Image (cartoon, rainbow, N blue to C red; front, side, top):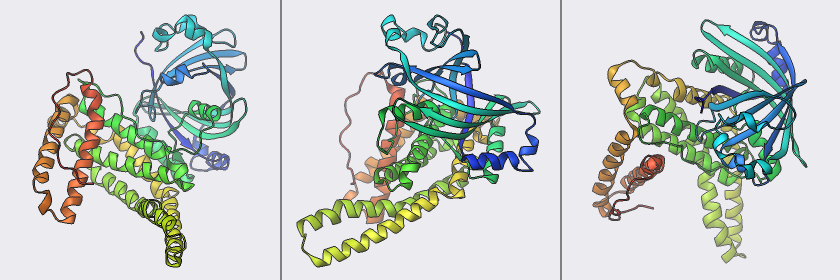
Length: 445
């Protein structure tokens, strides 16, 4: 199989009005040069049971005038926010040419039975305006996409800016994204057009997206492992953004989990990612957590305590009054949460954190000690962290009856971080012979 031809890009969600503002802006639009305008009609293929999607793949045939281009994409879990593997081939005809996929990631799983089930499932029609930006050794393709995704019984609009690094320094992608964000409220988007197309078919409710574990493996460098974990956390955070704005209680909960998991990852990898920006990143993540916390606290109190009590005491007038008071406070807390997620500070937090995870100085430092930590096998760091944290929990657990409420809270946080660590590192030990289970350790609820 060919080595992975990686596509490195950022996708920014904007409104059509924002696109017009950018193109007309004197300090931005005038620097873009001559555009290339195309109408792109892309037809996506899969089986009724979504065999390709379930294997992390997409297959499309793009119509560009009379030209037909077949593309296979593979988005590894945790990598899709920033990089994908992509195989592209000119073909003849409107249907996939399976004779040219043998050297792609699709080839090994494409049996005759699977081929017979593949059919068009949705399409996109995009008006794309592309500019090539060249500076020094870096070339970036900037594309404004406007159009629609169309399934059999549903459709949705597309308005976004794609920044694709053709070659050069990835940090310049973020600088360009930051320039755009200073002109219009552009937000990094983690959902691809294909994901949105599948959503149209499945018609999911405004469901919250839970965490998934990135595909770590023994021998992987610790720095690469942190990047994949960080991407997964950002994916979970951003995938729940819109539902949180619409007062989805579970989505807000998942945003807070994403923040806790990312902060735990920074702590676990502190010896790897300790650079000049880490404290600022942690401070902004803590700020966002604080903005979301009141809504989550009131959700828990109202849903888990107050409402069941009202059912038991339906005619108690005092409970009715108290319930109304807390519902008003809950509404205020959601307005606060929405204000935070809608803010320029949140958009900057997402961009800054993504940039730091991808291109922070911790990832490029030539200092021998920093480089050694970054390149150590992930199983070495995992074993060290799991051992240290387990010992601390066991030691504190033996004193649990004597701990103050504040100390119990700190112990609870330590236990939660250790749980996240075991989830992050589980794939590193896949296939290993299981040891005898450890004796149960005290847990603080």
